Length: 283
Ligand code: AMP
Image (cartoon, rainbow, N blue to C red; front, side):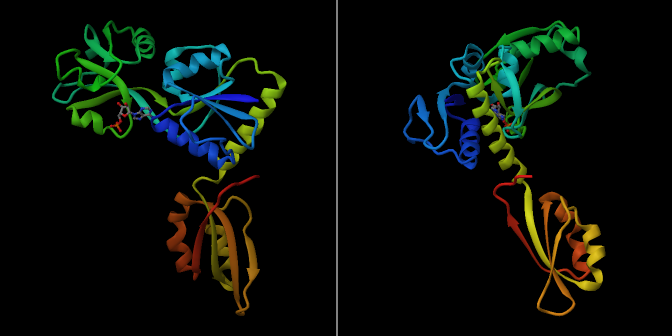
C-alpha cells in the first residue's frame, strides 16, 4: 500500500483528484475523511494542509505527496522531487506599488517586503546581495503595501489580477512553480513498484493531453503534400475511400500545432476534417 498526501482543498486539490481519477483510481468513499482508500489500486489518500505535505513525506507519515513546488522549496524538507506535473502553474514574484518607479533590484535595498515565503525570498536576496527586511504574513499578502505594512510583496502570481486589484506591479520573477510529486527518499521495493505504476498511469494521461486524433478526407493527388504539412507524431494511417481518388487520413497531432496548418490542408483539398479527443496514450 502506498500512502499519498494530497491538499485538503483549493485548486491543487481539485486538479490532483482529477488526475487520480483520470489515472483510473476510484475511491472507497467520497465523504470528507482524513484518510480514504482506493477501491481498485493499492493507494490511500491522506488529506493535509499544503504546508504540512513536505514534512509528512520527509518523515514517512506519507510515502509520496502532491504539492506546489513553491511549498516544497520553501519548506526545504528531505524529500525527492520525483515528477513535475504540469498543472497549477504560477510564479513567485516580487511586486511593488504601481506608481513607484522601479530602478532594478537595488530598489529593494533597505525596504520591507511582506511574504509567506521567507525562505525562498531570503535565499534570493542573499544571492543578489540585497539587504531588505522580510515581514512574514500568512494570508492576504497583497494588501500589505496599501496599509503601510510593507514597501513591496513577494507572493504567488498566476493571472496577475490580484496584483492589478491591489495597485501593484510585478517587477521580478524569482521562481516558477507548478504541482510536483514528491517522494520519501527511501521507499521499500513494494511501495516503489506501486509508485512506478502510478507514475506510468500519470504519464499516460499527460501524454494524451493537448493531443487530438484527426481524421480527414484527402484527394489522392495531394496526399504526399498533405502528409508533409501535418505535425504528426508518427506516420499517418492512410486508407482508400469508396469514392475513387480519395483517401481517409488519420493522425495524432498536438492541438495547438494543428491550428497552424489547417488553412494549408484545406487549400490542398482536405475535407471533412474531424478532431477527436484522446483519453489515454501509451507509446
Ligand atoms: P492571480 O490573481 O491569478 O495572479 O492569483 C494570485 C493569487 O491566487 C495568489 O495570491 C495565490 O494566493 C493564489 N494562487 C494562484 N495560483 C496559485 C497556485 N498555483 N497555487 C496556490 N495558490 C495560487
